[in-house]
Structure formats: C-alpha cells, structure tokens
Length: 202
Image 1 (cartoon, rainbow, N blue to C red):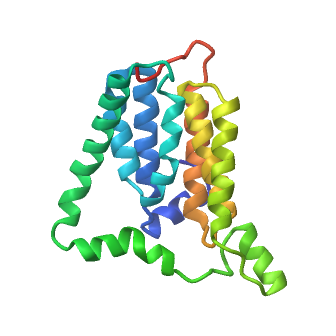
Image 2: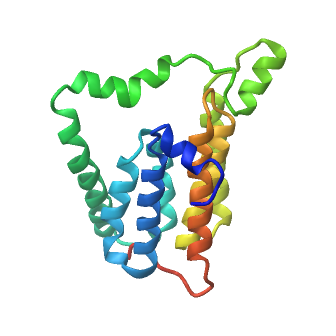
C-alpha cells in the first residue's frame, strides 16, 4: 500500500492490484476459511491470464495422499468458478476475447525497455533470446518449490512470488506492474507466516 509506485500502478490502470486482492483473499481463506479455498483459487487464477502458468502451485495445498474424488471435486470447483466469471466476458465476441487474453501475447514485440535479464542481454548483444527461456526457468522453479517449500498457505504464497519473479525476470516483457504483484505475494506470505499453520484443501 505504501510503496512509492503504488499510486503509479493505479494511475496506469494496471490490473495487478486486483490480482493482489484475490491472492490475499485466497491466503485469508487458507488460514481462516478452508472451505472457501476452491472458490478463491478459481477467482485468483481467472484474474490474470498469465496466472494459468502458476496453476501447478496448487499442489502445495492439496495433499498427495488425498483420495481421487477430493482432487476431482476441488479442481472441479476451481475450474467452474474460473469459467463462471470468464464466460460472460467471452461470449459476446469469442475471437476478440481469445486474442486479447492470450493470442496477442505471442505476437508482442520483444521489449528492449523491459525490466528483465533477457532485455538487458539483448541491449548489450543485439541478440534477442528465445521467449521459451522464461518457461524453462518456470518449470525448474516448480520442481524447486515442490521439493523444498512447506505445504502451507505461506509456502504457497512464497512459491507464488518466487515463480512469478523468475518468470518475469527472464521474460521478453516485464514492467513495474509485474513486480508490484510479486511484492504483493511476498507480503501475503509474511501475513500467513506461522509455525502452527498447516491448512490445506482437505
């Protein structure tokens, strides 16, 4: 709230503050209202298109030993919630919706002014690295967080922030609003920090 760039993010009408709000609602549910978690997860992952890449992080909150029906029910509620808030926006013009929320990203130009290592490398060498690097880094980060971070609300939020900051840092586009979300996720992890918290979807 008190970061110097917060009002700039709001002034530019970037939507990351909304994502931070849903992330905080998700963490609040994980700590205080576990039954709300699937709905909050659906709202969170529907709030920004690139968050679909962070969907595997939900494995940190669903125990591996949980029965298949629990997995199916939880993920079913998540997907249905996401669809319920997305479909009304898409039905009026599905091709335009798909272009704006996804397809256009693949045709975006490489931004030399991006706040990323790829942009810095391109400025120095005049060579544009592959945008697939960001996804390779993200996949490696998934394995790291699954292996080492606790399966708790604060563990999820910490994994969320780590995955996003590395994904953005090695992407062809990364700006102030992206890192605003990363810092918000770090704050969410701190807000849930407690050795007694072991809440999950079960």
